Amino acid sequence: MLFSLNLQTPQCSVFALLNAEFLHFLDSSVNTDVFSEALFRTFPEMIEDVEVEVPSVCWNNKPTREKFHSLWEALPTTIAERQRLSDQISQAQDVIVFFNNTQTVLPELEPASLFEACKALTTHLFTRTKDLVQAKSQSNNSIEIHYQSFVRGNNNSHLCPICGTALLSQNRVSVADEDQWRSDYDHVLCKDKYPVYSVHPGNFIPTCHICNSKAKGAKDVLRAQSGQRRTAFYPLPPAQESCEPYISVTPQLSSRGDLVTDSWETPLTSVSISYVNAPAEVLNKIEVWKEIYQVPERVEQHLKANFFTRIASDLQPTNFDDFCQQLQRHTRNTPPDYKQSEWRFWWQKVYEFLGNQNQLYLHDVWLMVEWKQRQSNDADMAHEFS
Image 1 (cartoon, helix red, strand yellow):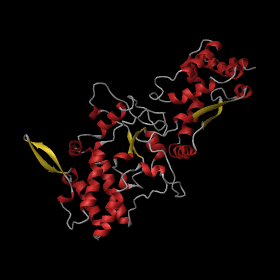
Image 2: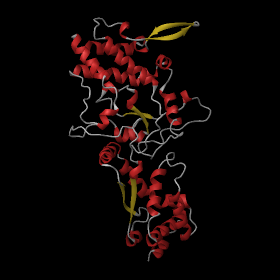
Image 3: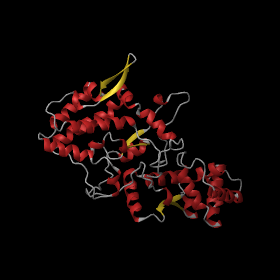
Image 4: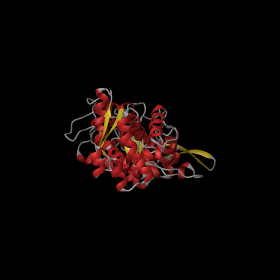
């Protein structure tokens, strides 16, 4: 987690509805011998100006009802076993505890037939049922409306809070919230391994496509590849832990000789990202963040590929003295789009590093910046560094 979210960030009511239906179904199934409408809740609806109680979307929608029926058939046969299953899941709804305490017990679905039936149901709820008109009306919400509320609740920022490198999505002018595009929604606990949380409202965070689909996929944030439990950042309120307060970026510039020979377009030999004064418990979570989302690798490649071009574009210095003054100005004040524009956070860390370097180091950087501004030829550069 690069940035923590506003404490007032809302959860999605559609997922709250579907999760509540899932829990209600498990509880109602304990002492029931017949799969029926009675296993589901009812909701008020206005029909011809009269308020009536109508069945849950989970019963009314045939494909969803069939998924619930499959889970029903996979449930334990005795009342005691069904009660234990219902209690196990209903008492493990505060998902944040799993991220901070490796001794907490996660719900287990056994045998495999129960796990697969639950996975099929909750995956269907997430991929299909959430988009039904009745799901939206019974929750008075939609994932599209929730996304817009999420953005507004976080200073109108569409920047991915996981990486700070890409936008979540883009809005269009004069388009209703319901019809705007939205970002990917990441299952913090992946649905393939933790199906009981596939529609839990505290298990979703809008993320950019790269973080969600390219980097994370079905990786398990709570378990290392060895299977050992570990702590990790919980990205939603009330949690406020993040990498942001501790990050320092150190670019390693090639030597003058290397620059003259073959490194003009990729002048950095490496970029080091460190986490200064981070407590041990936060460092452990940072390691998981690095593994799951591969943010440092992405940042290093971007900074190496765009180092002088971006500096020249941002600062637009007219001479070496102006270059140094621009750096000082950039490091004195945090830019307004620090948490809103792609890559801005990471470049600000670069400027903070450069602002603390000596004149000799900065002069080498300036020569490259000036070259980028003039787009000189190879002979000009060789002369500059001779």
